[in-house]
Length: 142
Image (cartoon, rainbow, N blue to C red; front, top):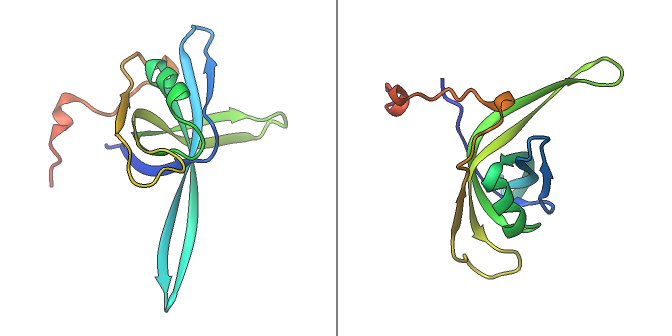
């Protein structure tokens, strides 16, 4: 099975850095992807918003290097958080767990800027581990 996401989007707000009880850093941010398409002779737009989470040194680096308006390439995988709300109803949310983030444009700057690639190198907390990849998954059988 494959669970891989690559998305280019613009940050909708500044990232929020928190610390887990273990002391590990975690950062949350959202990106928006806007799709432009033509219907007849008229251009239409639709926007999609994605929540992103990163851990460890990647989280720490992102919290100081990106902010609202930055355009980034996020590579990672989808994870689903599940919980029960105060009324006892089950809830869930799918987010992107970032494994690397590339900054491709700063806000209010014309043209692309120097690319900065940040990658996670630390352990991911147990509750979100379980990557479906093994060394045998290097080749896709089609």
